[in-house]
Amino acid sequence: MRDAYLVFNHEGYDMTESQDPAGLLGTWRQLSAVTENLSTGEQTNVFRGQPVGFVQFTPDGRVTLMTIDTVRKKPAGDIATAAEASDLYQTMIAYSGTFSTSGNSVTYDLDVTWNENWTGTLQLRYWELRDGMLFVWTPEFDDPFKGGRAVHRLSFEKMKPGDNRL
Image (cartoon, rainbow, N blue to C red; front, side, top):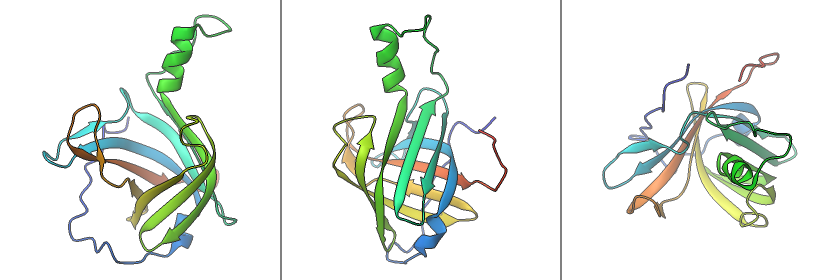
C-alpha cells in the first residue's frame, strides 16, 4: 500500500532551471495528490482516499490524465442514482488536450474534461523530474475550503513497458 501522501520539498530547486521536456514523455502512475497550505506548510490529501490514476504525455504534444479516489463506491444498481452519480463525479479528475513547456512550466490547453468549466481553458502547472519521479504542482491559489494560499502537488512514477500495476 502506498503512503497516504508524499512530502514535497522543493528547497534548493532552481525554479529557472530548464529540464528536458522529452523526459515528460510516456505514461506515469500517480502516487499522491496533496494540497499544501503555504502559511502553515500542512499537507492534506486532495481525495478522501488514495488517488489511482495515470497521466500520459505523447510525442505529438498531447496530455491525458485520469485519476480516481480509492473510496469510490460502485452504484447499487446498473444506473447510478443522482446522489451516487454526484459522488462518482466528485471522486475523479479527467482531462485531455495539448501541452507545451517552457523551462519548468507546462501549460495544458484542454479540449476534453470531466469538469466543463475547464474545457477550453489553459491550465498552468510546474514540473520537476527527480530520481525517476515526476512532480507537478499548481500556481498558488486561494483555498476555498481551508482559507489561505495553497498549491496542489502531485507525484508520479514512470511506467515501464509491460507494467500493468495500478
